[in-house]
Length: 87
Image (tube, rainbow, N blue to C red; front, top):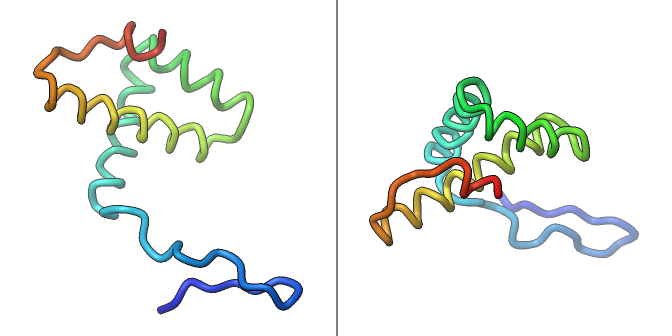
């Protein structure tokens, strides 16, 4: 199915059919939910983000951040440190 939206007879939203692996994205969102529940540092980061946007955007932003962290952990072989993550 083609992701196409038109407005004022102009094509909008082209090239937005797929945004990565849906199962991996789901797993990172679940990890973000658990991180908010069990990590005080990440909970504070999430709450600051949630004040500026909304709950769904904040949890997805945390999931994206966790995905980036996982990449660097695997690439560089370092350990996870929540304090470094949130500044």
